Length: 232
Image (cartoon, rainbow, N blue to C red):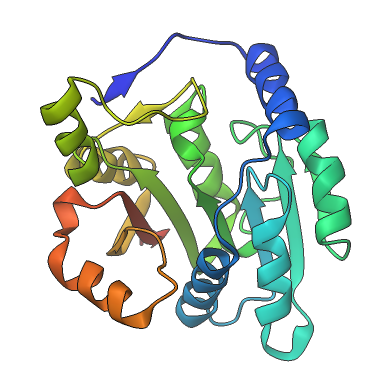
């Protein structure tokens, strides 16, 4: 399933991400993080405890804190990179942080109301076990939000057509898959997918965003955002 680059170990990946966060911090547009935060709070009731897996420099946690209804949400972020955690503590100082990998989460069963993993699952060494850990720490009725890349993004298809290669990325250890492949992986972990939302970035212009939402089909979208819960 999907395309995978060279196999690496945890220490290799940690070193790579430490270098990235020292030289070229990984981040999306702030408006994208605000959009994701809105989705989390819309889909999760209540959302008192939220875990962000591979939290990076804390930009999304900052938006979760800002958008929290009542301002009393408990936020936790984990990342393999200690350099990323250093930045996150400055960006969102009210959250709790752990240097950890998704494959072995150091939290009790059914502890969180929401778990988010945005644009990171595809970089993990053991994706199936990471998904099982997300399923373990989410409470019954809670929500798990997983954003993953599409193997057949329409811009990659155009790039291959014109140049023979896909668009470049700034991270080397990465998996790509179709929507159905991702769904099968997620459901095998014990999670049930409630809905799939297409993600093609969040435009500055509401009109441009409406056009993208209308024109780009789900199966050719840049990423898929899966909203999941525990299976009964």
